[in-house]
Length: 122
Image (cartoon, rainbow, N blue to C red; front, side):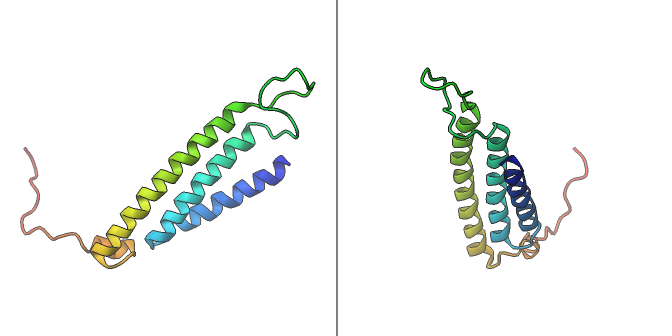
């Protein structure tokens, strides 16, 4: 089971890096979201995958309990990554409304050219 999860995690990392290297803002945002999911799956896989083992000690079973710490970390990371994605999505939408493009290279040309050079010393 761990081999399958490692392959899925590797696929998520590859897809997210591919999307984050794009020129378009929406692809970058999707890449960041997939990257967060890949990190969550990495933590989950590192926390040892067990079948039918309770996350806490129980007197009813002789099975070794699963580690509850990775599960708690993943729940916290899901909330944080969703809030960051929502913020970045609103930021991207606002940049598109203001600049009229989602191409990051064209967004650079929106910077104003200063007639005076910046100060060279203080």
